[in-house]
Length: 404
Image 1 (cartoon, rainbow, N blue to C red):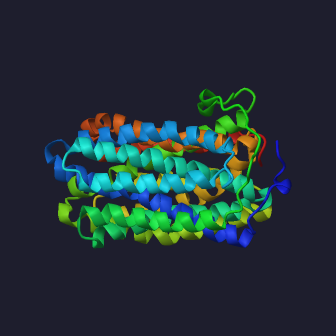
Image 2 (tube, rainbow, N blue to C red):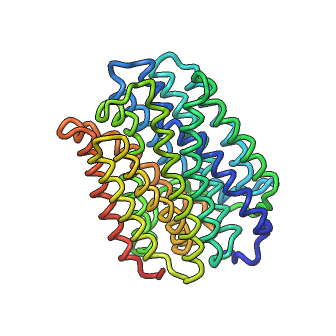
Image 3 (cartoon, rainbow, N blue to C red):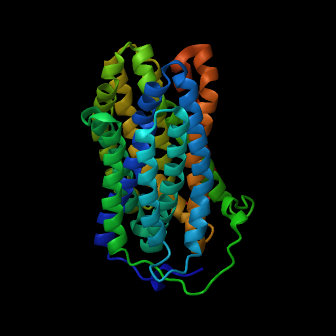
């Protein structure tokens, strides 16, 4: 394992400013479709089968994300380019991802929507894998809570910005293209200032190992993976189907749905930013991770339960605020925790790619199982089931032994 102190490092102030901005751009391009614009696009091209078709598009795309993130993480770990290990994948991923979103925007059938979305998922996940690996590459353990808190903020701000852009931008090309363009600019800035590692020695690639780790040898990493998986599964139920919940459960007119989603996420944003900043900073100061992750996950699930039981838009906003309070702190501190249980820093891209499988897999499973819960008890039952899974995930954190 190569020690962090022996590696080229970007000045922390520069890294701390540009790395979160790049994350904002990537997530703006990737999460805006997941939260709202893909649902609207699928409804426009196939209104009679929108739920089924959206589930298929999101499910296939999420499966490709599941595969591509650890695969490209492994490739970046073994990249010997003179431009560095991570930079080539950052640049190539964001450019190809933009092309995929343009295909989605111009599509006139569900098939073409799916093709464009699959291209975007593969490409953006290649960039995300390289982006995530720069955190353990560049930042000492004692400062990772603060930096991951900033990353958590920008990830969540990207959701808010995406919903606002969707509400104000005219037409599909602008709604998909503007986030893609912002991502190109911000990732390009980060790639330009990054003092990336250059590895001249070729190492065995062994791509099949990109998707596996031994939980018997690294049990803490395994429990961290399960914690992230369960939380993201819970969040995916609420995020993916919020537009349909608003229109069908609360009776919001379809034309008003983007605006209502924007209002809900903007109101929750203040709480999210506060807990992300404070949670990461305080976690660094006291040297503890687990209590923050457990409490944050439980608070977020209370918020999801409130959303599920909402009978009005006002009640839904209360739930979104509570959900935001927990989510901000969770993502900030959980990422710092994960970087402390990585099996090998020299395989950080691959191992963080495996963690990102816990981000992608629930996006595939949630749409696959959602119709069952919706048929039985509607969207409220789906959200409650997601909350139950998230509560289990909060309890799993107690199984991690190597981090306090």
